[in-house]
Image 1 (cartoon, one colour):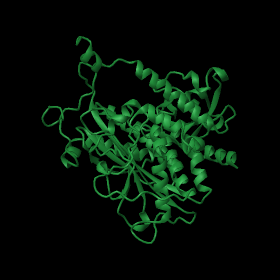
Image 2 (tube, one colour):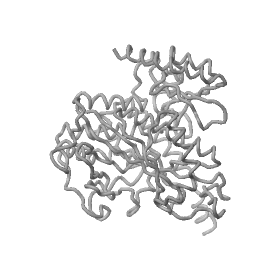
Image 3 (tube, one colour):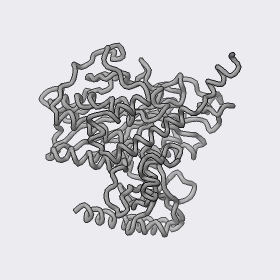
Image 4 (cartoon, helix red, strand yellow):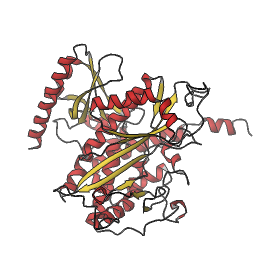
Length: 463
């Protein structure tokens, strides 16, 4: 049945692609790509005529591509390279299939792929496949997640300082570099009006549903909300395409966009907040309950998320730079807490109508792979529901001073927590855990070998 459904989806995608090609005779190339485990998009640029074959026979690329490190180097310890002869996997279009790239200077299109094994079957190390599997496990309990993601990002100058560090853009009004946060300032949105007009138009052309945009707490920092999706996999797909679109539109406007967790040590970091509710098979929100507190299932989900969070940290904060976000009073949660309408806690339950009862998970950085982030959250919810866990008392007031257990504070410690954990690693499977663990160990080794400018400035001539 799964193969029949995929064949039907591919036929529908191909028909839409042929219609697009007919309406865009100047189209020369199509970008085809998948998300690796870091969330980096990797693929090929194909002649437009060749792209149609994707919907019939797929595209072969090395399975090891899923597990390369953030710089694109093979990870020899992951078991996908030398041991297999670096065998190809078979990739097929997923999601919406072909969509335009409206930021491009000439007609361009793109297709998102998912890695399969050499015969086109499921490949458990693919991050999108992992999310599909976790979604299926919840569906077996008649639980169907609805998710919306909020992403923060910086718009930066294409110039840099003498050490290659990023610079904030120059104000169009004064010609001076922006140095103020200007949180929620409408004047700042007006100043970037052409960028946001193009961003919303580009997302609309791709079927990416956007909500509000606001000015955030860093100089040149913004947040855009993606609308709730009934399919959690579609929510992740849209997030991947949204990040690509932001970067493409920014470049068109002579800017650099970054979702790096902490591009400036003294300014706000970039977060990725997830709003999630849960429906039953009849479409009712099982988190609703009989009052404003929500249901017992909501409490079980929160308890499971808090229990799994230390093991999930390597997905919530996957890189060396990610851990710079977690500072007290920074709006990045540092404790394993929850509360009603409390933005200092790791999990916030917003005030809203009962039918919209949900949690907001606030730990992750904008550099997280959305597939792995959502898979980790689903695994945490499932753990809480299956074990009928009870959360600790809600935190009222300042969660930074609550005395609650802290989130893991180190990159190495986060990987160790996942590797030795009893919740996520068993749920994600041996192959995924092996490939992801090897990837992160290689990145950590390379980071530890790098001597920083700070060390040269501090120590080279000090003694």
